[in-house]
Amino acid sequence: QVQLVESGGGLVQAGGSLRLSCIPSGRTFSNDAMGWFRQAPGKERVFVAARAGGSPYYADSVKGRFTISVDNAKNTVYLQMNSLKPEDTAVYYCAAVPQSYYSGSYYSAREYWYWGQGTQVTVSS
Image (cartoon, rainbow, N blue to C red; front, side):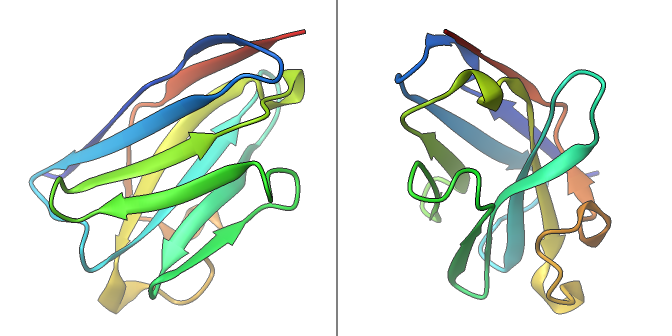
């Protein structure tokens, strides 16, 4: 059974940085479309960033501040988050879908097959 494990969350002041990591067990990322989503209290889970077909995609709210990357040697997906804002506070989730089943909707949570348990990011003002 595939499991994704996120790490790297924490408490940071506004303007600071964090790097989230996502490591799968039972699967390699190299042929998957990968995504990061976040969910704030009382709100829906929303798209943050994705990497599919070798291209990165970002939500407008994080463009220019967040970077998604994949280290195939370490089988790890990263989300580098810079210039953090209080509105970035949420639980962040890593997600994956096999490339052969990827339909192009990188921004939709329904696209993804596998999910991590989430890691809390809190940005103080």
